[in-house]
Structure formats: structure tokens, C-alpha cells
Image (cartoon, rainbow, N blue to C red):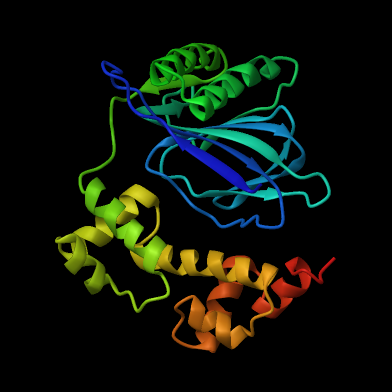
Length: 278
């Protein structure tokens, strides 16, 4: 299994804090390590394995017991050690941010004092258990677990309940993202997206970047590269065929974009990650 994600409905009277999802990820052959960001905070707990958490231009080593708080709009990605595969639980939370003692907002906060932070793991596991079983009242149970978790986290980091939710244009941005996720092989342009979401392309470009940390066309390119990575890893299609299947306008542009995002050419990526690779 690569990753399984569960959305969390907002309970009635849930207040300013909003739980969005809980996900369990494990390293396997389908793993795609592509930088991304969110318009909300993430709580990240490393259950087992080793690797790195790359945050913008920083790389923090990861191992079992590490706990990260990642602030909204901060680009990050997870990189697993191929021999000691990462497994981690992530909870997406809207309406919260983490501050330094001086009141500034850092990119992230790392708690790697393993003498203390193992006490946090059961709360992550409880939320994951609740959202996977979805028994009666589970959104309220998850919210109560999160409130306890936030109280414990406040012993190590300053937690600010902002009450802020997603920026204006959320529904349009979500719709644009859905179009790109589902129809990425097609000839998608910013004008095409704006026409279908019924807003100006300038407003869409601005609000999409605010929400996801990248422009719509950057997101589209990354979505195509993620699909190309999957095809290179699991199938023997030619590079020209994969170029066409993922929506790139030419093989040369496909190769340039792929190397820019992954650090390897498509051929090199296939040798490393493909079925015949080491």
C-alpha cells in the first residue's frame, strides 16, 4: 500500500478548529516524492522507518518517533530510505498554526526528543482508527482527541488557533484541481480552467497559488509527472507513448520537466525505479 486517506466531516458545533483528513502512508514501489503544499497545517508522526522530510530547501532526517508540525503554505515532501521504508500518519487541520516563543511563524516545528514524544503516537493511531471504522459519532470523537493532542503539543510548541479557514475562491480552486487530476492528459490551459470554473484566469491563478502553494500550470505539470513516474515504474511503454499518455506537448518538454522535478531523466528514473531496477 502506498497511501490511504480518509476525509473527516466537520461535526456540528465543531468551532474554529477543523479536521480535514487523516492519512496513513507506507513506502512501496508506487511511492511518488513530489513537493506540495496546503492551505492548512499538518501534524506528521513517523511511525517507523527512516528517510527525510524536505521542507522547501531544507532536509530533516526522519526516523520512528519524530513528530513534525508543518505550517500552512509551506512546500514539503517525504523521501523514504529504500531499505528502511517510511511509515507515517498525517492529520490535516484548518484553523491552526504554530509559532515561535517570539510570535513569528516558522516553516515547521520538529519534536525529536524521543523520551517524550512517544506519548503522542496513540492519539494519531486513535484518530486513524476512528476515521477508518467510521462508527457513529466518529467526527466528534476525532475532534475531542485532537483537542487533547493540541494540549499536549502546546507543552513543546506555541499553538495559535487562528479561526481562519480556506481563502476565498476555495470551491473554484477545488474544481480546477479536480479537472486537472481527472483530465490531465488533455490540452489544459489557464484560460480553459477559468472558463470552466467561471472566474477570471487572474483570480484563479492568485487564489489557486494561495491555497496550494503553486500555480495551476505548475500543479498540472506535477500531476502529469506523478502519472509518468507511475508508468515508468510499472510498465514498458516507450517514452514517446508516456509523453502522449500524460499530456505533454513534446518528448523534449516531457524530459525537461521530468528532470526538473525529479532530478533524473525519464530513462534514468526507469533504471532506478522500474521493475528491472535495483
